[in-house]
Every structure is written in C-alpha cells, then in structure tokens.
Length: 267
Image 1 (cartoon, rainbow, N blue to C red):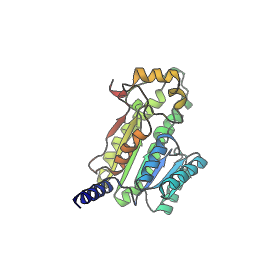
Image 2: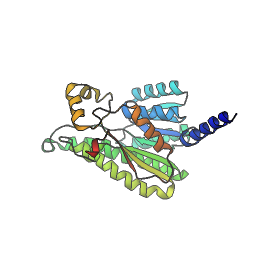
Image 3: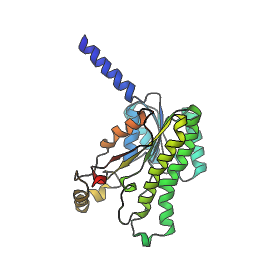
Image 4: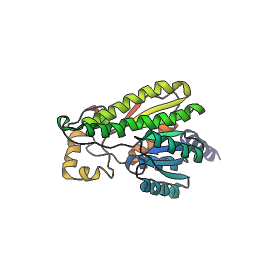
C-alpha cells in the first residue's frame, strides 16, 4: 500500500510539473526537424498543437501525424512569418478555433547563403534576416498581444550556437540568430509585468532532414570530430526535454538562453 502511494505521488508530481493538458501551442516551422520534434513532444504532454509554415500541405500532414500518434487536436496552417498581415490573419483563425495560445515556439528559419561576407548581396542578407529575425519578431508581437490580455504565456525562441560564436561564410545566419538572442532578452523584460516568460534555445548541429546530407558524409563527420567535443551531432530526442521544460518552467525563469550543442560553444 505504501509503495502504491509513493508511485501515485510521483505520478502526480510529474503530471503537475510537466503536463500540458488544456494548453494550446503554436509552433512555426513545425513540420520538420526541431520544430516537429517539439510539436510531437507537446502533443505527447497533452497540448493541442498548431503547426504553421509556408508549406501548407506539409503542415497539415505533420498535424495529422501528431494527432493520430497522441490523440490530441492538431491543425496545420499556412503562414509566412515575414508577412505581418498573414500572421495576424492566421492568428485570428487560431484564436477562433482554440480560444487562446498558451505557448509560442518560434522555430521557422533558413540557413541563408553560404558565401563570404564580401560576396553577399543585399537580397542574401535581407532574406535570412527577414525569416530568422523579423519573422520571430512579427509572430512574437502578434501572439504576445493576445497573451497580455490573459496575463500568462510562454514564448520560446529558437536561435543557434552560431548566434553566440562565429562561422565563416555565415554572416547573415550568425547575425540573425544573435539578434534573436538579444530580442529574447528585451521581450522578457517588456513582458515581465504580464506574467509572460520568454526564453531561447541555442541548438548546435542536429541530424535533421536539412543537415543529414552534410553531417552524414565523411566531410561532416570530420567536421563534428574536430569542432564538437562530443564528436557527433545531436539527436532530435535530445532537444525534447528542454523544450518541454521551457513550456512548463517556473515564472521566475525568463530571458534565459540554453545551449544544446555537445559542448561546441565552450571550446
């Protein structure tokens, strides 16, 4: 009987700390890679999920997979994060359907051009800054305006370790991701009085649909062995618990950045 009581108490503790039942999460760029891993995690924890990105069909399919797997309501929406009018329209649809947004994960992003700073065009820089930084700003502003009305919410931005360290031929990406980190800090300060926490995850190299071609090749494996102390790329399962923690973290935690990079950024 005592053992049963202890098990029940432990279960109740985990439920209280990490359950997302009754919550609604909006995840941009959520149909693949890190975004999809986070959407799947939140659904498993009980959250309703909205996956939004420019590719409507892939968002709808990802939402179907998540819903079938975990038995929660999930929908896919077409949304260009760089278009403030489209962001506002999609957000209205989400509020009409779900009533609220409790959690926002800004995961939409592109790597931008990989060329020397000297050879970058105006369009090269504008494209990556617009998607990775301005997109994060536009969606965060729109969602935060809804969260402020309810005096509660969690915003999780996805930056990169390349927002903290430099890499050759990645001026646009490094600059945009550094801007996301600084934006996170300012947002956290501006939203403190409204009980909204804003934090940022800085992933290193993860094996995703986008990166597998390079990381799975000999050149990629050599790169990881030289640059990453753990000598490997991260697995998407290794980012899930951090994303869940930030969606459920105490209100005293805000403006923080968490690196998940196999030690890359400390050497």
